[in-house]
Image 1 (cartoon, rainbow, N blue to C red):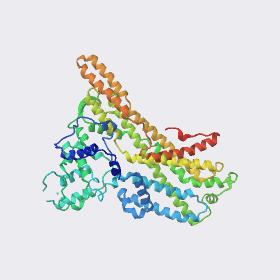
Image 2 (image 1 turned 60 degrees about the vertical axis):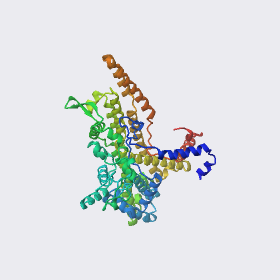
Image 3 (image 1 turned 120 degrees about the vertical axis):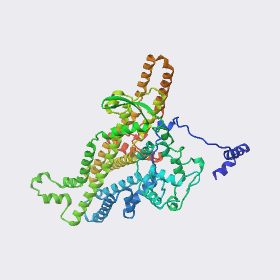
Image 4 (image 1 turned 135 degrees about the vertical axis):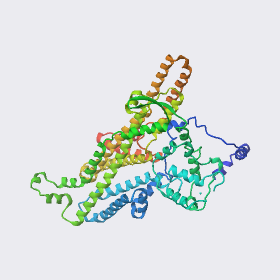
Length: 582
């Protein structure tokens, strides 16, 4: 319809030009071509060269699916077993049934507050939705959807040897080969990209066995494999296997091709070796793994978990306890104040809610500790990357050392920088951090609304106390994550390394005047690299997931409006925080 309306404005020369363009693409003679892998793309410096797995569905659809799979957990029990394990799924099913029992018993317990029932319920929905977001890339690679995309690189290569070919093909397929291939396809794939690098270390010829996109689909379905490969996506398979795919640059940086002369230390002795990006990153990864991780935030999470689990009992005891009669009260009387008169239904309800709050809250704080540990590892990666060009620190950490003394070394340095920035879990941790951030915003909005409605009786509500504990814990973890993320970003964006190498080049010019012209070229490349890093690097964002701008602006205005109203009520004059630009 839009094209028909636009056609009324077209002149004769526009129509003829469009027709010539359509006919010209098909009629032009074509010849074989290849990508020059010795050059770099802007994606290399930006970091998008090392892409991560992404879900095919939008976040709204994944959120809807997550809520449905949690609310109807027994009907999706087999799916939960696939994305977790049978033991974990069974434990979650027990918690689900306990939640149903608590909902039935809630009306029989007058002393219970709404937060004791709906708190664990909201936590289960949140955790289930976050988990569905995390495993969305894994579930999209299930055998029923796409057998090829659900396999590891080694299995994709073996499948390619069976079904991708530009010419004639013999998998006559032996029965044991069919069964072995079916087993490989049905095996769950790993959520990490570690196997890709292991495949590349074996050789460039083994990492790619498919034909290029210009050679056509080339899919052959031999007998015995038709049912397995009938839903294979040709585009994904050829883009992964072909030299023109997204692994072409990685193959160009293979140990047998691009190497850099580095200095390594073995038992205090200085030695030289030629290493690639993957080999250097492997040594750095080994050093990162031996760094001891602190247990402080894990202990802090346990403290908050115990506090939130026992908060309802402490609140009821504080409301009914008379300090003057404390010495004369027995344990039975204290128990009556905490949970009410002896009753099987009452005791069953409080036991169920306490177990649920303890398990689900502990799981949520454990999830936050995982995000904190991942951010800490990213910071260690960034620190070790900065130590590569420092002889003293490289020797201390026993990592390879090289100077940016030529253009090839600069290229390898940029490649290593990009690779280390994308190393490790990315999207899964971003989902966790985003959920923490959005939960903190929601709690802040509710607290501000409660303060505006009833600030005189604000502390008389158990729900408000629980929300304050949650808000305090989330703010502490968010501050920790923001600090680690900012430090990591500063380490990778630090141009002092490049400036130091420029000084070293001038020192070499004085010692070797005959190489002044070559060193000037390297110096100019360092200046360009500095400008490019400043141009492409962006400030650290705590909110990992990309949010719709309209939703972001609405949320920002609503939350800041509530905070502005509270602050204005306390100070006595109007403050409009939503007009402040972030």
